[in-house]
Length: 66
Image (cartoon, rainbow, N blue to C red; front, side, top):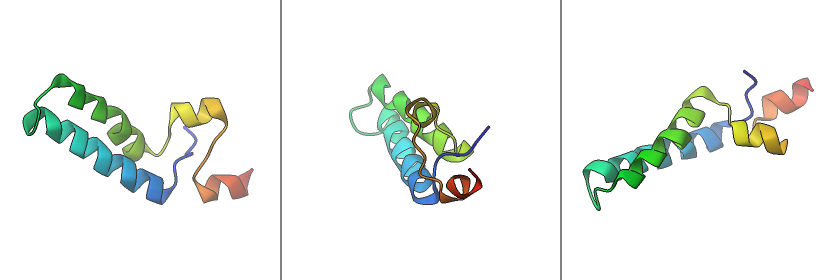
């Protein structure tokens, strides 16, 4: 799997994902918070399928290899 998510983008995704998942247990306690799994997983693995479809990359290392 090719990395297309840079370091800052990864940190933001993990933090946002954890906050959204936290909303399932605290705050409004709705199931919509489970959507946080998507940014959490993409941040942890460093690859985003949506970025790949759109031809985007925030990972400077992958840009140098191309």
